[in-house]
Length: 352
Image 1 (spheres, rainbow, N blue to C red):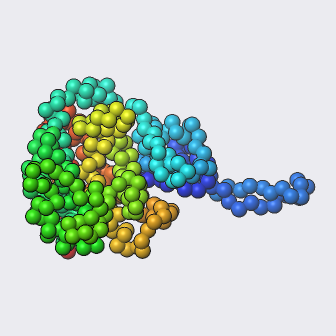
Image 2: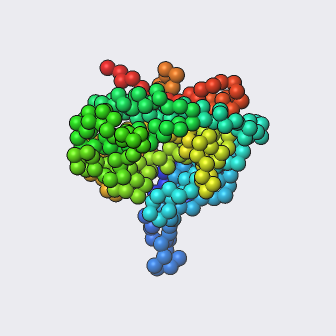
Image 3: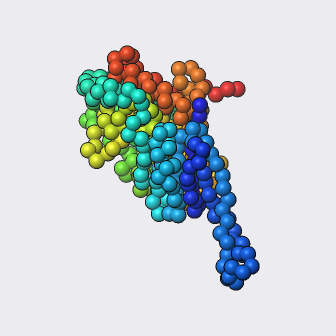
């Protein structure tokens, strides 16, 4: 069942009753009854209810949102990911249950005992799928990408040649570029992948193409649409972490990412092949809207549709959030040596 993503961007009081999320929204005040003071006003609340079992992600994006402990406990019992935003409306916290599966202790053990060769093989599959999905998105905009297809085939165990970065350099220069098709033809000659001495480099560091043309720079604190990508990736990270917990896995212990300050290394690993779906959503918004510089409610609403985006898993269409549970379940099977490949999504073939 597809779970709902709830966004709260206005003052609200959230509590629970009868296994429901009870949302109390301030309504316009009205004068108090006669005899209770001349200047007093009675505060009214508009109340709505949402089934907890239908909820997958809750986003708290206002400084005057209050949530009860009882509701938090029930959200954790139902493996709901709760995202908290700061006063600049950027996601800063992720709240997940400590116990998300009945066999969690056993699954933690198999995850901890995973060998380095296995983790490197899983990372190889992850990067191959990520590059393939990036190439598929470029295909949708008729941007030549034979070099990326070739790089995906050449990724070795653990990606020691860093094809992920090489593909990213080409991909980011073209996916949001105004003259992407022309630039891609030049890049297909490997100009953007490898110098004569064999060292990889990224044109993103300079922000200019070979002919001096400006192109998109992917940076967390960069110019728009970086803000849109950041927001979409935060949602994707929460979806991934939630699915990992639901599969009895520890989101902290990655197969590749190892930053000691990162509590979601495995989530950051597994979400990699899903990133192009977030990129596609942002690209589609940009095509249908005037230049966007402010993350307003209308824009966030469009980005919050990410969990319902259609992907293809094992030849069948599925919402992204549902596909993620398939991916994390297959990852656990890999740790348990019941299968060799992680099940990752690809872009659905268009229906004509």
